[in-house]
Amino acid sequence: MFKSLFRKKHVEQITSPVNGTVIELANVPDPVFSQKMMGEGLAVQPAVGNVVAPLDGEIVQLSEETKHAFGIRSENGIEVLVHIGLETVALKGKGFEVLVKEGQKVEKGQPMIQVDLTYIKQHASSDLVILVITNSQDDRFSLEFLDEQTVLAGQTDLVTVIVK
Image: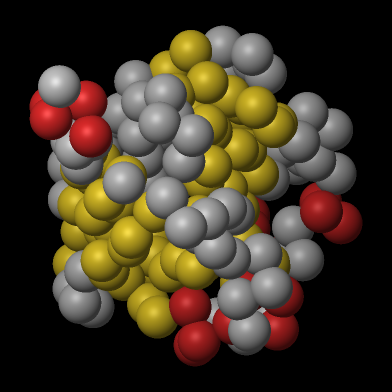
């Protein structure tokens, strides 16, 4: 009887979508992200252009025309947006190769988008890869962020989400 009164907390790790160096969201040169209008998160200065799934889930959003962003929803309802570069919409998909489809189930570390970083650096205002938990205001979630450091795609935990 008492067991049903106490729900177990579940911990979910969100890993880096790229190899690189973590940057605080406040330092991203775009107010939509730096002022956390889209939610809590962080950015990574990428070392390579391989973007992977930061957690297990379903692709719920994919910018098929511009190819610069995707959203994943985990089984626990955590919604993560990965946005590649700033002002990359204007590139109309050039420099990006999408490897997945909307509605597809993906696993942490699975390749999502191949990015030509040289092209992005030359034609966009930034090549930062931004990771935002778009439903971070949900009371069911408690977030703990990693300190700034070098990270590996699909391996280094960036955010610990405690699901209540």
